[in-house]
Length: 157
Image (cartoon, rainbow, N blue to C red; front, side, top):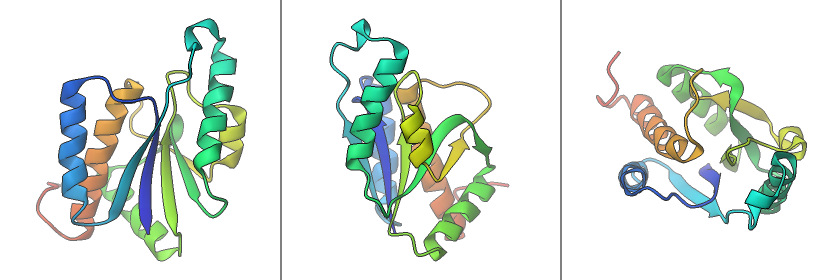
């Protein structure tokens, strides 16, 4: 199984880039993983939130294959502990899924088309994080889940 983290817009902040790169390197030992960055929507400051979400949605839909299992990182999604998230990943690995795609939307969330395409939704916390910060947090949690699956000592109970 391949895991893809699909994000809208590049990461601007150096410390977030460094954190993402660190966990990206660590993950390569465990699983086929990529973070795919879609371009920011042009002239978004002149668009309504709805129009911006719709335009981002078109970009996202254009990168998904019909066979992809799509999980949105969404504030209204299911909240997992790190161990529960590792169990979730194991179920997906055993479920004959070719590519598991986690999607982080733009600052206003997702369009209805994206919600309709998604297979499920996951929330990292009841707190709100910037969509750029979520990239690093999620990549670390993915690494943590892999170490839990392998029985390595990174995660402490």
